[in-house]
Amino acid sequence: WNWEVSDKQYPGWYDLIRELAGEQIYVLSYINAYLANTGGLSGESTTLFKLATELDCLVKETDNKTVQIQASATPDFTF
Image (cartoon, rainbow, N blue to C red; front, side, top):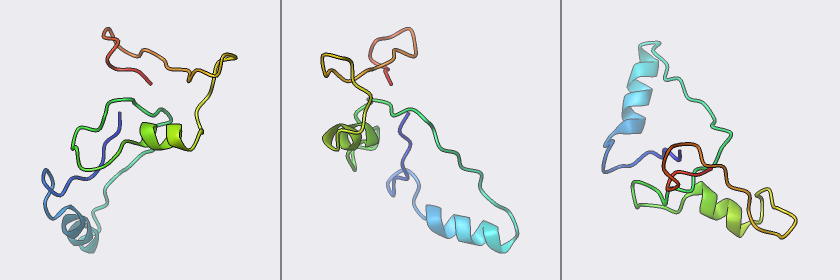
């Protein structure tokens, strides 16, 4: 999954984070070890999967094909 902040979906996100921090309320974030090949839901930027592919940073099979793991019942959602 490739969540990114979208100004369209979350206007004022960074202002909200600063406001909450001023009240000692902090937002929990985490790093997902997988890069989902979803195409990006927001359509505002390229996905991390695409960038990693371009930089040749992904695990490869012996035939040089990128390793992808199907993580759900549908083959449309792979890591």
